[in-house]
Image (cartoon, rainbow, N blue to C red; front, top):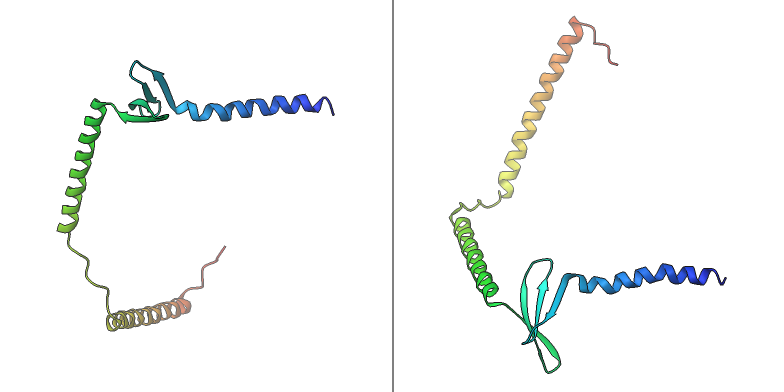
Length: 136
């Protein structure tokens, strides 16, 4: 029993250290004269952070803010263009009514009955002149 306890501690230690590293892995925080600079390692975004009354407040850097605004304008323009294209497209007609559905089904039923008659005629003609092929 005493030997199992150190093994259990060793097995749990790496898991707990990984759990502690996970939140810190995305952002890097560096102290500057006026506060902090935060780097998002996934997106590359840089934020300027200040400690105000015990709360860390972060804002995007000015050049990133301008790029962000340009991207928003570009996306807004694309959305507007897509909306215009959608409005210009012909709208689908309404669904068929009950009478139109019944008419279509009636036509299909007549077609299928006639088709089956043709198959029966063909099968009876073939049966009289030739033996049925071997099916494997």
